[in-house]
Length: 276
Length: 276
Image 1 (cartoon, one colour):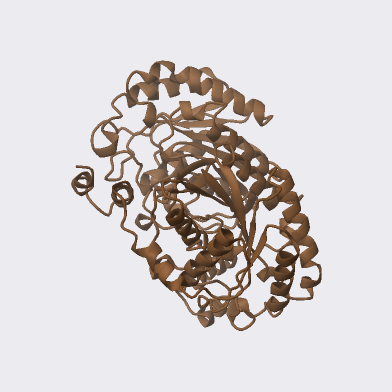
Image 2: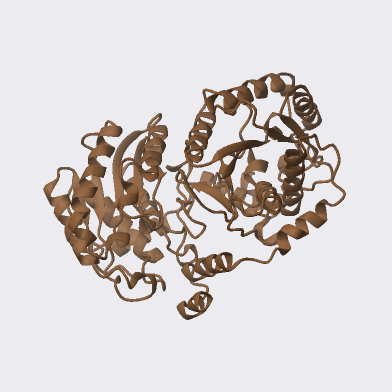
């Protein structure tokens, strides 16, 4: 199985509202819990009680449609609100993420890192030292996980920032995006992904659910083609629709019925029908 | 800060329905996420998407009312459906839990272990080797965490088992309870807690939300008094009511408002009123 490490802040963890779009259930997409793999359900992250739809679900779903019969594992380690300094290599978040990745790598091959961070550094000139800091972090991830050439996919911050509510303070987000882009252009196996056209929740700082789906599709395109994605993909909405419209397998339907029964939403008799 | 390691299977993780009872918000109760502490919200565990109310919230709330001005940290490591063999000391769950506890212990003092497990071993004579197995696991926890004399609080399996739905197969749960009780009686700093009178969700295997609240109160009584709890406490329902009726602090109210705003349930103006 191939696995991907998910790190950064809240827009990697995901805050898209689950009620706005269909959930993805795919028995070939796994997520790490307690050091072990289980079938993915959304939210994938659990950094906050408000965790919701993130970009890795549509990334993984797109990966699956290109890798018939294979499985993919997601390692959720993003932390809402975390600044680049909180990801320093001696810090808790970094060390914990490395630990989680090592558990994952006991029975999977780490195939990439999905990174999204920078809102917390979009003010007070922090962009001036941002590139140097991510460079140190990414180098150490490669070293600590003995994965010198895995790709890092690096998404831009949303153009909705710097305007309202919790996003209002992120006035230097364009400068962070420049640093992310420069870093990706200057370093092998690093790919930049535009956030052009993505929209926010009412909080003005979190990608909404559909934007996360689209972003995941762009991240996957960067991964698949080994290239920077500077513009929205012409067919990205179709690709999201494909994620939402895949017909679930019997295993997936049974999983969903089990969830509903355990939550008291259907009777034991209704559950048993799924298994008969 | 004092911290407690939560291990076992689903009834430690918690499957009580959150809509059945008021949630506990207490700025002095923390939970571990990504190796760091944050204010507790329920569900505390994230082992499954169906995680709900567990026993540790009322345990911690009761602890707080006896420890004015102090904080308590919860380390959620239980895994739904896990058998005693899956907790063997070389296994992933064990090693992951030790890792999590070590992150917690970087800035807290481990003060105890709350254990609830055994449903998955309540059949086919597995009780015959159960005591020997928990003994090895508990000894190794004490050794690995350099905590030779911390208390282990060990709850019994529910008397609703062996009857319906997912609980129907747990026909030897009384034999497991005998082993848990014998172990606790024979070992220093281990306390047994009865599950008498606790009731289940419709799935026949998971304590319902109110039962988890009561169980947490009993666990705390065992911890506080250093004794086995063989019978329901005469005032346990009052103590649960006290958990539910504590008046929230301004910090807690603001936290709840932030959650609601981020989830799109109140406007920015309504949120700002909480902060004015």
